[in-house]
Length: 164
Image (cartoon, rainbow, N blue to C red; front, side):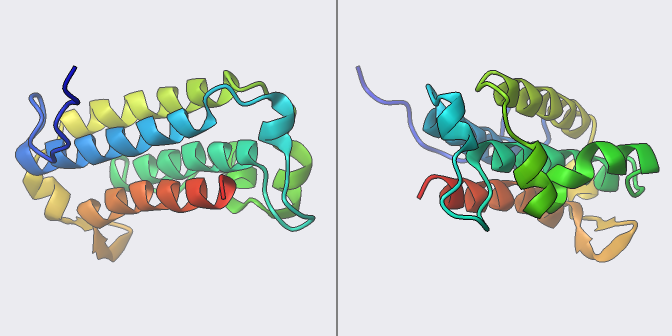
């Protein structure tokens, strides 16, 4: 069996640039999920030292970052007080995350990541490349393309930190 080609190309259902980004987001997520596949609760909750975050906390962080960028870029607003309460521990990580983001079985994290990603893909499907290059309303120094690149970059960074 020949391996599938590793290419960044437009994807049907998305404008060309957004389709390429979707391909990158999809590949990054597949490698993250492959890296944690089969992990036990003890492995997910393990911390290298007193200052590090667990793999589970970093997976929760990935979902929280993606959700916050959905709100920033698609809804053009900041997190509401209720959303801040729901997502801030995972966004900020640190002591609160080390205390509370633990005890979840492996299934919890892919379900949360998948739910957030479904919303991302649906919203990206409804946008075009012109939107992608436009400034983010609340943070005009960045464009939507950079914002969504950062979602992928943040996941890659934290995956590397968790699995070193």
